[in-house]
Length: 186
Image (cartoon, rainbow, N blue to C red; front, side):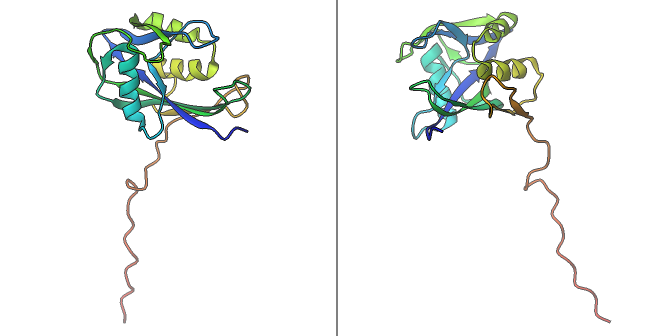
C-alpha cells in the first residue's frame, strides 16, 4: 500500500446550456475531454487550487466553489507517478469572467471549450476511468445528490461504495437538552 495521498480538484462550470471542458493529453495516454482541474499543490487549500486550475486550463477566472458536487476516493497501484490514494473534490462554481484560452504551464491542456450539456455528458461518459466517469455523470444527471461520496475499495473493476451526503442534523443543529432540573424538596 502506498503512503502517498494526493488531492485533485475539478470544476463544474455551466453557462447558457453548456459545460466548460478541456481536452487534455496526459503522457502515454490518448487525448480526452475532462472538466478543468488538477492536483492541489502542497500548502494550498482546495478552493484556491480550484481557482488556479480553472484559470490555468481555460484562461477564465472563477470566484471559487459555490457548492460541493461530489467526492471520489480511490487507490492507484502499478502506475508510476500516480501510485497512491487520491481524493477528487468536484465543485460547482458561478459563471466565470475572462477570455477562453488555455494557459496551462504543464502544457497538458490542448483546448478549452464550452460544450453543450448533452455532448458534454457523452464526452465524460467516454472517459476510460470509471472512477472519474461515474461520479461526474451521476452528479450532472441528478442521479446522485450533491455531495455524494464515491469510494472504490476493491479497485475500478468492482462496484463503488456510494454514500449520499447526510441529511442527519449536525452537532450544531441538534436540539439542546435542558439540564436536569433539581427535584423540588418537600
